Image (cartoon, rainbow, N blue to C red; front, side, top):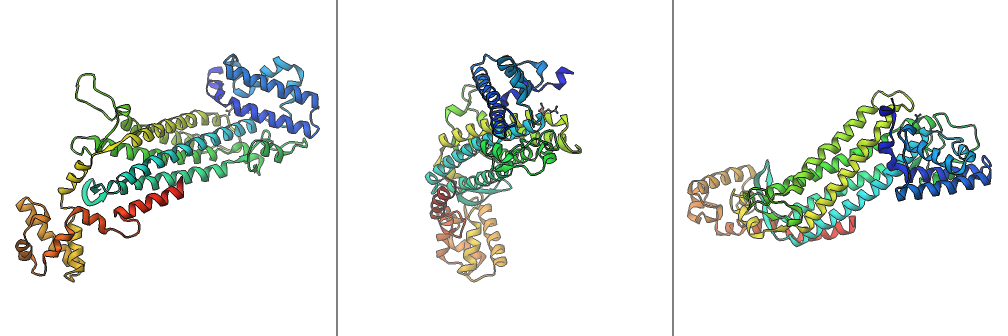
Length: 442
Ligand code: ARG
């Protein structure tokens, strides 16, 4: 029973939050005249001693004392004797743990937000540096139209910006204080929940005592935001893996984020990117774990809910590690401009530009232009040349309305430069988007 019941093995991590919440509770009990000032002082000083002991590593955690709350209270009793027993007036471990956990998650969300911001900074820096670097844009992982590396990277700036929005949104709802809900029904003592909420940096106390101890939405919302962010990191990790592959050779990652092979001397493996790609699984797993723990639980607290902590701690640590690695990889990444451009010379990437020209200059309906372009691509394919290498005669044999000005739109540089529509890939747009992103996000 002790082995399955105890949570001290993992909830000891909550000690700074547990002690801060106890101190706030104690100060409130004192001010409300629920405990004597002398007792309050002894309790608060004892809690400070315990904080120092745990920080210093001299505190002995006991599994028999089940969790962080009882470990702290038992040590307080050893230190100050009888007054220690007055701290638990008008509270329960149910509101205590909900408070501690929210405090812990709030800090985690703030750390993650700072890391996401750092990742956006690294991406924007690279996007500005790569605003003119042409590369193939893909759909179905098939070369589709030319884009710039800067534009591609700015797509991720948007994704991570939305992630930050989701974390901020979760944080707003998370920031209410359950302390004082007591076991589930509130308390008959004249407590001041506004005071404890304010002391702990919460916006307000939670409104319903039963919901206060039964709710883990704040953890689920954070895990949901973490899962989506991890999914984005995984996609970027996959792109880095592809881009490092010899078939692409679009970028080189620094030695700091790659490893060699124990047998093949030439190898430089993108392990960091692969691991970021993989770690999303653990984070999504944490979300599914907690959703499964919570589903079907009747009001209010159930010991099931003690199973909330390990997945959340693991997901947060995993996301923080993944973000740290991704920030380093992006900041150090060296694009290979030649290879990026060379890849645009296969796959008839300017076929859409040709069709658009036929619409604009030759006045064809787009559907007809699409058909004519198809015939020209077929011709180029048969001759194993690029569209721009077809002679004017060959072009005119397909459609007599084509003239020499068509060649102006067939280079990848002209193709990207022409895409000046809002949100488009033109280098000028990318520079403006990067500047705007600095203002929106940094
Ligand atoms: N260790 C418990 C948890 O993590 C604290 C709350 C215990 N409450 C109780 N009524 N046994 O959920």
